[in-house]
Length: 172
Image 1 (cartoon, one colour):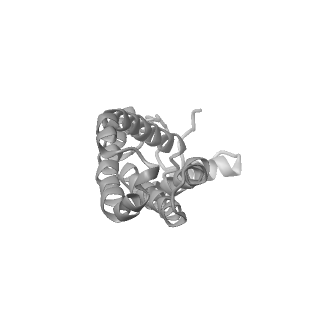
Image 2 (cartoon, rainbow, N blue to C red; image 1 turned 45 degrees about the vertical axis):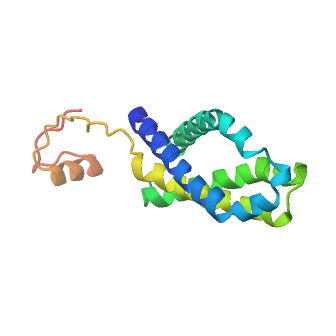
């Protein structure tokens, strides 16, 4: 695993989460939050808790990047693989937390549904960012010493199981 890339991807996802979170929560869903304001903390109370939220969000983004790296397949587009990972994580979060926010908080159904949709979009973006940045650590190719001068003849020798006069002797 390429730990410097995991760290960089996690920090980039955190920065993206702040920007995307602003667009989703303070622009797209703001009217719905205002209509359901009685179910949430007051703005002044939230401001005092923002550092706790940002710290927890940074840890979450680092864990997100680490989990991506552990499951990284390396097939196809890195961005596509990141989006797919982000969507899977969003579905998990929606199922374990966001849906339960609707169940336990007296908010409008529309707000609950749009929060679910918002998380899917947000985590798709975070996955794309992590996928774009994360790369496996490139290991140097092993050096192999071979006494075969003509590879094709060497393969024919191995396949036939007998000596081939066209090739030199093969040493294991």
